[in-house]
Length: 512
Image (cartoon, rainbow, N blue to C red; front, side):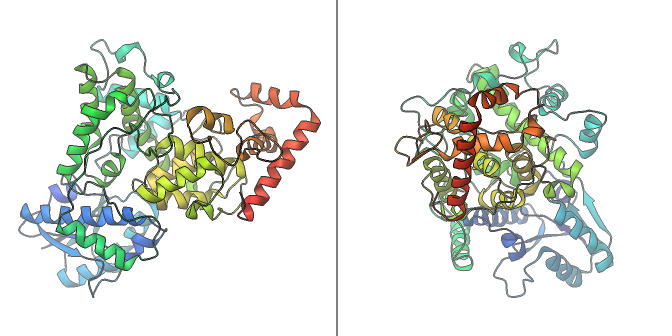
C-alpha cells in the first residue's frame, strides 16, 4: 500500500529518510504551500518567496529522480491552507497505509502532527531530523548533571566528535579552541562587502514572486531585488564562493557594522542550511579545508565553524530540552509593547534605523546587529520577550523557532534567566559607536547620557542595570560595572534614571 511521505518547507534534502526510504513506485511525497504556515507570524515576503521557490524546485528534482510528488500550490482551488488539512485531504484521496514525516523544527507543529494519527486513523511515524549533528538524546546526555550549559564546552565536544580542526594528537588546531578574541576589530575606513554571486530567476521563481506579490500585498519587507539561491546546486555555488572569496576576511571584522553594507564578510548561508539545501558538516569541512590549505586564516575558519558546529547545534539542543515552556520565559519581567518602529523603521536612532532598513530590504541582518543593536535595545527598554521573539521569527529568512527562540529569548533578552548566557548582552552607545560608523550624523550623541540629544542606549543601559541589581550584582562578570554605577553618586544616578524614563515615554509615543 501507499505510504504518504510529508516534506516540510524547511526539509528540502534527499538525504533525509523520508525521501531516501521511499519506494518510488508506490509512495507519494506531499509538499504543500499553505497560508497558515506563511502567516502565523508576519513573515517577510522574501522569506515566503524563498521557501516557496525552493520547495517548487525541490519537487521538480524529486520528480526527475522518479518520485511521485503531490504538490499543493498556495493558489490551488482545493487547498485547505493548513498543513494538517492537506495531510487529511491526501489521506482521504490516497488511503495510505501510514504517514511518514521528519520531525518539524517547531514544537507547535510537532504536537499538531501527532494529533493527526488518531484523527486520520493511520499510523504516523515522526522520524528524527538527521541533518543535525547532535541528536536530542546526545544533547541531553551532555547536559544532564551540569550546573551550567555553556556553549563553549559543548562546542569542544562537537569538535572532538567530528574531528573538525583537531590535530592528530587530539589538540585543537592552533593550540586554542576559540579565537573569538581575535575577531572583534572595529570597522576600518573603506570596509565593504565583497562581491556576491547572483542567480538568474527562472520561470519557477518568477511565478512565485508573482504569487507572493498578489497574495501578500501588505506583507512585511521588500520582495525585490530577490537574490536567494533556490536549489541545492545554487546553494553549493554560494558556499564555494564564500569559502574561496569571502571566508578569508570573515574573522577580524565579524563584529563590525557599516552603514549601507548589510553583508560585509558574513556567509549568508544560514537560510540554506536551515532549509536543507546545504549540509552542516559539508560546510564545516569546506571551511576547515580552506584553513588546512592556507587559503583562510585560522581565526576566520574557526569563528565560522563555531557558528555552525557549536552555536547552531547548541541552541537547537536547548530549544528541544526546555520546550514547550521556553518561549514563555520572561525572567526579567519585561512588559513594554514592541514599538511600531520595529516594523516601520521610522526612528531617529541611526543604528536602529540602519538595522531595520537592512532587515526590510534583505530579510537579513548579521548577528551583531541582531544582538547588539535591535536585541540590545529590546533588552534595555524592557520590551515584552514574546513580542520580540515573534518579530525576529517573522523578519529573517533564516529564522525558525528552534534556532531563533534561544538566540532571542536567551542570548539577546536574558528572558531565560541565564540558561543560555552567563550575563546579559547589555551595552551602551559607546559599544555601537566603537563597532560601527552608524553614529555619525545621528540625531543622538553617543557621548551624551542625559539632556538634549543624549543617546538612548546610554541612560537605558544604566537604568537596566539599576532595575536588575539584585539579580546581576552577584554575577562574577559584573562587579566592575556596578562599582562604576556606585561611584556616580545619587544625583547622577537619578538623572540617568529620569532620562531613561523619558526615552521610554518617547518610545511609546513614537518620538524616539
